[in-house]
Image (cartoon, rainbow, N blue to C red; front, side, top):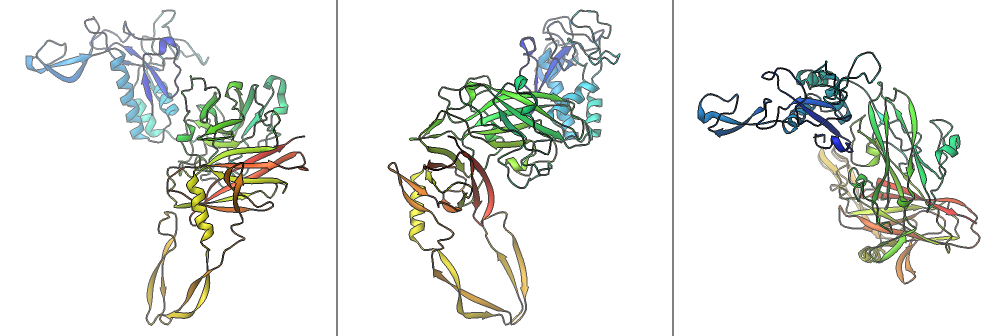
Length: 557
């Protein structure tokens, strides 16, 4: 969406994705094109359009398509019953610019909002070139010897023909990428781990003091990430690269902090701040998504990469615990990064791995010492995932067995459904004594999972006398696949995980629902200090991987 606006220029235009418009006179009938008496002006004006003057003034106004019957509006047909209303000023100028932008997008729907704005600027015509007013005079902003900007007119009066032609011919190839992992080259969907972007990291010292210690050795190296510290300012670093063949225009790097690092972050829902960016978060900080800050960048050459840092105000560093429903759990924070405007290949879905302008990094925050117990909340599923059940795979192979881990679903129905599942032995297939023999050639449709959109369906032709072996179910529980135990912890029903291997847990919930879970644990005696990763993966029915994330367990002395 592109917004065309005229009323905020005097107080400072704060909104991105906005084109600021001034209004000029209409010539003819006016003698020349100049700023109308009531137009806004300033350093943030992009372009102007011939809106005409105010009602009752000396400056000409624009005829509308609204027939008002009788009257004497200038320019209307002579018949008194064909008089048309008129309007003017920036209320008339803005719709003209919006209309030209719409024509440009109809000619080239791949244009970003920055490219639309830049084409409008570059094709605009300078008017009132002899203006000597100290504010309105034309100046040379890029020092090339040619005046190109006026606070009265921006880069000039729009030229619809040239703007649409330029949009139709536009073929710039710009692709600003933030990676999911070091092997990511910007193709979508990306492959591999996506929840620990090497292009996002945190430092706990002011960049002026931290210096080169805050930077990775090269684009192909992991960054020197540190866990952020509660109660002080931290700094979020973002690395990006233009993998296109042309230099970039303006773009913006946005960093967010969010709770619930769900298995499936989706855009734009999870990138929309819980509160407007100008609002300060509640105290204590509630679960949600909050904008840490934004950095502006321009003219990144093709093939080049760079790094920006954004100060993470201590007021936006979340507390150790948050209450969700009736359960108090540890904040499990995640950093989200977005490059705007989105460019490069068209996203193939709504997930982070489907869009190379999005990335995430799950992090841990250093808080005061605790008693060895910890909890961290996460979410399974999302609104667009219609699987009838999920399988949660927890990999704790790197975690010492002295750390006891459990899962607590916040919805009690999840535990009840899981108990029913445990009590019903799982069927395994064993051969039967019967066979089916086809007497004639037969075509067969194989539909492995009819309710899963991504599943394959294919037709095979079997020859006459083909034999199909029948099978029968056997009630044998696969203990190696489902090695969890249902028990209690502090009076709550939980799912205890295996102590030294992977654990799989089937989760039965309504399609399209969000399932809030808590991963908890107790760090026992004898666990050595260090960082231990717990990996969680989400599998849809049909065992299709649909997301995952990692939790860093930091054990200190």
